[in-house]
Image (cartoon, rainbow, N blue to C red; front, side, top):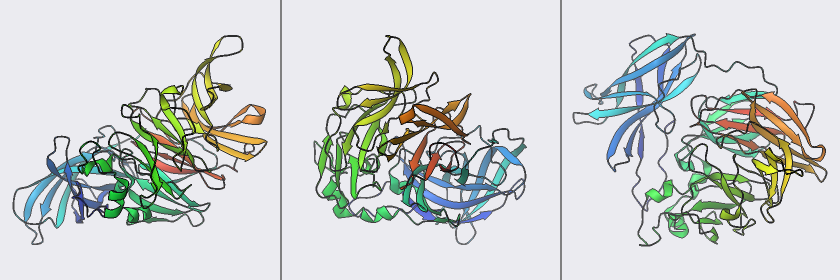
Length: 459
């Protein structure tokens, strides 16, 4: 699905997109077909404009294909060759994936560099794909319970509309949401519909950019359009307010039109924001780390901008992305703390972001990395709290539930995911806490829904 350029009259976009009509001719066979082609003008790391052809390669055959290379002739509206393209499979961030295959019935994203050597506008593409038939042992064939797959694309954001419908974004997890391809999924019918854009894109206007100051350089007051793309602008479903960061990484919330701005924190310039975890009461934890394996720093606050926690620098770091209680006053972290006997115990802990007091949950020798989802907290009533945790059990990613009142840990089901160090996963509880959405990017990206009533415990 072609991406729509965001409506920004205030400045020239760095990326422009135009849909193209694919014409598929293949050197091998017709199992592999090219769809959703799109021509992009992208500014690279050196500030130079490059032309890219992107799209999806679908495998309609019965065997898997690997070692894939794509070539294309670029044709104008007269059928004359005006350029050529060369590319390969990549992830949604444009990183080449040389070690992946396209399984039967699956599709993969590709990027191809375009060289236009004659005048004219690209109209069609004549594709030639070279690939090897392989025995794909990367397929995750495990028996799960209560799990259905919604997508095999790189899903990086899920927005629940109701208990029976959701939107999800496919793209690079470091991009702002308007750069994603958006889809709507109806749980009752099982139908997926491609959307032209996120509904929240309508808020991004010239007036919005001026009001929020997202694109303003703090010191010079000049405008830098690129700042929009690094703002982590987020429209959470739990509140009508939005959140974003400035060029100095100041964290700000505002109304959806950019009015009534409130500064959450200003001393964050040396930390790399990675995302937010929201509670049903519109409290959030903002979490920060630089790379895989680094400790996760965090702070908690309200959507109105009021801080709940102390400064980020005063919070004990976590090995994993922290979960959040509804009131935002405690986080669920991992680390090593002394027990009553003075012995160090590694595991999962509740930690007060106000007093710093930690409360032991359970011991865990193998703590996942900061690329695994944050624990999902569900307060059923005053006497029942469940925490849903994704971590490896005997080297298999699995869903567990910790029943707080009884201090019981239950393993619910294996999960059909596999994360490498440069890949991430996220979970999103439905509004009434009946379903848990699990999204992953990378080589085995996808979206799954887990029915939390499919288990005899923690429902």
